[in-house]
Image (cartoon, rainbow, N blue to C red):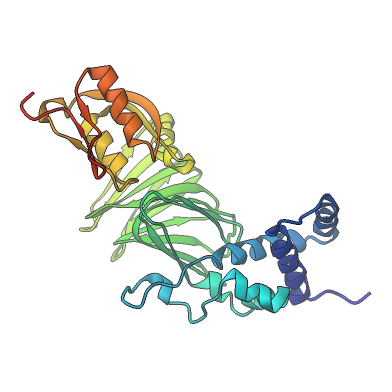
Length: 318
């Protein structure tokens, strides 16, 4: 029997992925896929690469007057054009230097949370109003956070370090899970699994290791700080991965700011006197109205929902 080449395997994987995305996927096809996956240890990895490439085909081309990281790839494709070329076109996009995944920008709009599987087996969950650039190379896996926040579950690969850049901050992991959030003048890192190493670009001699359950900050002036935090607090902070905001004794002004990250309709604390009041609860990121009603019931303060652009809680000078 002729030995399958890597390209042959990628083409079969691409065909399976294209068929799975349709409406006619049957149990017989699923059985065939499972047999194919079990036949060769290279097959599961090929399927993952094809799935990642297939998801990347949904990236919209930016408008002519907007310059974004998404304009870096020289090749623009969508699922319709690739389907016209069959599975060979998808396989070519994987094998040809991984144009779609080796240097691809991903972004989210306000309120959008996006889960992206990478070709190396890692997973990225991108938070609201964020933009990242992914470059997977033979020697290293480099991620750049242009704005916003992302959580990474990193596939182990000792030969290819996984390095995230955000401002001056640099975060290095091998096989671990952590989040990175870019603030206006600093970068925040939270580790949910394993260990990461952080440092500031230009100050490589000063490095800190963060273990699971730790939070660290790297300022744009290269100052670094490690802050002990309970694992449960990190889980609450990262509830956005499931489309939730978990408030546990959060001040109202901080809670309002968190809801405003995810919604066009903003929450305004109109009475400064209640801004320091605290509230517990778990809410959907897209439910500022439910948050406001909870404040109304809990604290007995007025809530004005009449303006479609904002929600006012409390009254000035109340």
